Length: 279
Image (cartoon, rainbow, N blue to C red):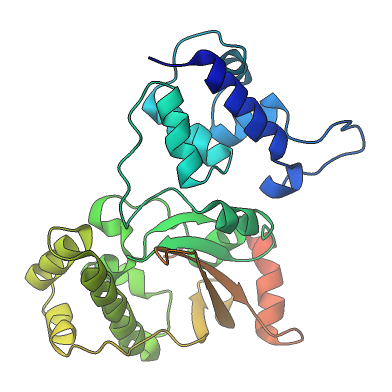
């Protein structure tokens, strides 16, 4: 059974501890107290302010697992806090795995401050969990994919359209890097995992992948400096910095360009051009 009093008190404490700057919101001159307002949390969770308010006021229906997951993301809860939230709401805490869509709160706070920079959070399988609007303008919508196509390596070997983002001369090095990352995930997760399922599917569907996989090249990696092929701006030379979360199951990728260069000027234009659309 849900403990409505504990649930309300816990949500209130987490909301009051979270500052506007933590989620990319302006503090504003009229904010008298710290923490977030209920309507702000509701917006972050993708639910109505009335629904969220009733939970804090110990009214209304007990939130479903889907609603609790949305609240955990909106409040930037740690995994331990998320599990606690589920338990006091009368649900079993989600099973933890190496692969999770629950973004590390520290990583999320950094991403929220990078609205004017191309940046995205990815799993070790190359599945995009979050991306900034500038990342969408540079790389396209990386959140639209479903199933195995969520993994970059799967799209690389099964959908030729996924390769237009890089100049053709750079395809071999990226293909080997994607394959090496998949092997790293496979070694960490073992048989019966999602990475193992990806390997089996790609071995069956792509002779190219099978040939690269057979080389057992574990040293291949993406170059720090990448060339991105944009349909309107042409080639951008960017530097990709990667920040790993503590358990190294997710990474934050940030794309920058050297100030004063043509690529730097092109990056500034992304906010004007808007979302990337490939022909």
